[in-house]
Image (tube, rainbow, N blue to C red; front, side, top):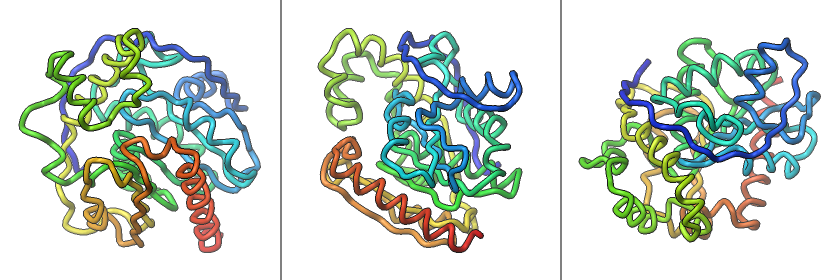
Length: 286
């Protein structure tokens, strides 16, 4: 597999949001898709799909809204992890392997249908890498493009500090979150919301802290990789992503902190760049 991991389950979150997804598959497949995927804008005739993975503590709603920003050639699937939104009664994922197994088993038929790309921000970048790695290793599939945002390459030792931050007290944890800007300010300012979000953040952080990946002797992907980052975010070693693919790697730094992608101007840049990348990939795919 290329990585090793360990972890433990946590209590579930009480965050709830209504999410709708419809699919013509059988009842079992439909239920699994409804749990995992949030797709506000169904486009069965789209040429390509963009699969989006959430940041730590995040849900599926932000990326599900992206569907309206892309034209009819791209369908957006937003991944909903256990323990949040309509899955709030489920235990959090025990480790990265838990997430990867669910995503690959549920989405494999769709991923075989047409070209697809992954987008992940922060924790979502790590998930997108792990899922892409599993698909390449077990099924010979890979995205046409891997878009990673606000995250260092998974094999960097600096990614894992000596002290696990998921073990911090609530006070220490909040102080650290505020310092690194890793949580939207509207959440940090709302005590009631914080009580709901903190368990999710801790659970996701445990997965990050217990995910280890050694630098491969040769690139594991051939697809292009684009790295996005906020100019005011904590510095990330984006150059190291070049170790993982034989394809082209480009880097774009946009104004803002860790959540630079929520700025409308930056969001417009992301959508335009992703669309252009799809168009380029399609010319060589068909």
